[in-house]
Length: 282
Image (cartoon, rainbow, N blue to C red; front, side, top):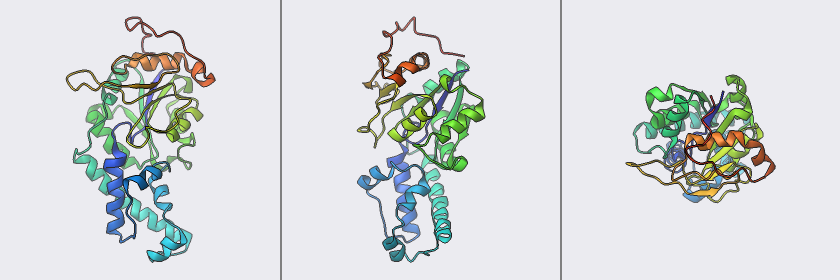
């Protein structure tokens, strides 16, 4: 059984810049914390997996003193948990407003995968409520109900550790060699590769300049045909998949059959004819 596992933020929608960043800053303001993250600041923070973990980067002795926070670790953890709960509420409100559109191709590919009998899942280190709100935005209620969601603190170590993907694969009873992960960041890619999955990357607002060596395919987006046409640009194609103007499920199926070549850093087979592309595994 083949499976398609999406990351959430940056993959299903460009939520980091337009959702998480303003939600963090609104939370800081509400709690009277002496910090506001700029776009440049946040470009560095997104390299830290997990919202609570990003908040904890603030907790230098100087910041704790300036904000009048307790010095006890357990008490500080409790404060961060309060901030993060409120941040999640603000963020899910932004998502439900419809202000952030889904990224091209994510629903189209998921519909094709579901029709072909693939297992669908999301694996993210964001809070589960946040992930589910983005999933419903991107997929619609009916298709979203077909997804298994693995999110938040179900694992202790966040990406780039492989734990969230390994957990998802284990819970779903999948063979890692039959799973394609869709990621947008180097940390996410490393997590997928560490769990033994093939990984396709769709770069997002903060990740275009990251190093994606090891990914089976790197594109600017999955793309979509008319009438909402978005043409993908291929940034790296080590297996020679050569997708067309938009990525198809058959292209992702090729990643499964040629995953060993990607891990070894070899060039893959000649690009298949579109009509003769391998059928989606089932």
